[in-house]
Image: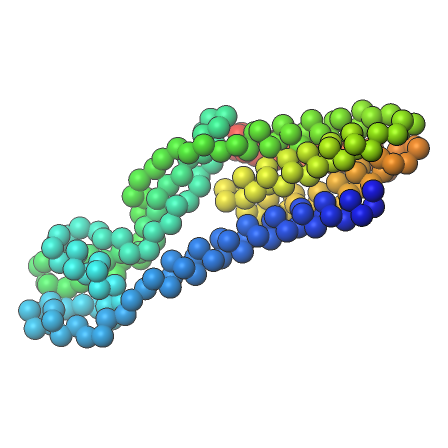
Length: 227
């Protein structure tokens, strides 16, 4: 059982870590798509002035010149805003910077002003994982310590960890600080509750650890839907 607890803890840490790494990788890929202009002579010969910052975005400059006064985004990102229904996550497409061609003075400038381009609602299974974590923890608490039930312990423990991990991952894009904080304080209580299943008496520390988990799940649920 102790080996099993170690494996579950590694899974908990690994899932949260992989999520953060994936977010960094996406950001690096997006920034890696920048292309620098070798020369702006083509536009300068036509009397169009292009700022140094804007010269990095050749394709966007072409679109801007064809549509004077229109904001052409060059760096966009989908930003989760929060749950607006039981399974609905609102997500905004935000342009953090863009270029605009001003026809009056024939100049292409870089605009660094976050602008919401569009909004959409996507499916989020947060509540499913949350219920799984809550019910699995409850079932672990309900098992009488005098009875040997290794398969029951393993199944409920796996469900508790998976539910906790994926509910934290589901809310991480919306509230990264809260998700990280709750993850940090949930490791020790989760390990203790799971590891104590093989003992004959659960004891006061076991119930304190369980209460901490319920409080953590309550905070997570209330922040997700009531903020």
